[in-house]
Length: 194
Image (tube, helix red, strand yellow):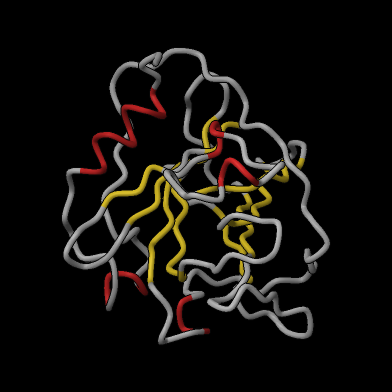
């Protein structure tokens, strides 16, 4: 496998064990440091995927989606938005939505739906839960990403080593989160390239 900046960032982050939840998660700083590497090669843009039937415009600006289901299995999703020259993109829109712990989407309100702008270093993060399976689909998150003045990318993110990945016709290994385990909870890392 080619050593890309995205892979190096994911690998380096996996060894960190800083608090992922509590006061750090609500702060204006990411719950774990997301430092770019010193060397970088050109990156391919993140591939697009369907938004599916459950997209709903007008999401609130928020990072904490886990509060929608205090009993759910928590996870922090985090990463950078990068351009194809591996430069961080500040002020990029990142929107996330997903099913709940029962495999249902909230189509009336905004449970498990939110958006944010990347910080000055191009970092994004959400505290949320691990979604459940539902018929025909493996576990996944939906995302929209847009650099200032750029095209809108719609895609999905997947978990590694899920038994249902191979049976899901939309699954693409290029969209797999790098998941690391820490005492505070799991961290799913993905860097969008737009």
